[in-house]
Every structure is written in structure tokens, then in C-alpha cells.
Image (cartoon, rainbow, N blue to C red):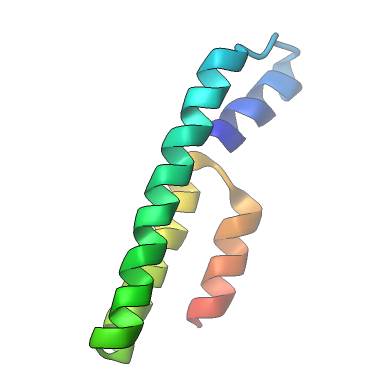
Length: 79
């Protein structure tokens, strides 16, 4: 949720809670690392459909945290 939180704070002129933002960024990085590992494993051990499924999961995760640019980029890779 870090990208969404940053955008929201900017849009409504809130003060950013830096410890909260840092914890959200760490959680995002951990989840993205996990998804990248799943994609790499699927590329080595599974078929194209499984790779695409994990890439779509990564795009869905970007969407859930409010990172619109990364969603778009990830969807372009999938299709």
C-alpha cells in the first residue's frame, strides 16, 4: 500500500508517517521478491501458462498496493 499511501498523502496534504511508510515498503518488497522467485521457478520447472499466471499475480499485487505504473508495465509483459 506504500504507493497508494504516498499518493494519498500528497493529494490531501497529509504529513507522511515515515515509520508506517517504511514498514509498508518492506512488506511490498518481501511480497514482490516472493513473486519474482515464483516466476523464476515457473520459468525453470513449469510451462508458459504457469509463468503467465504468476506474472498476472504480480500485476494484481501491484494493483492492490496502488502502483498504477507497475501494473501497466507488468500487464504489457503478460500480454
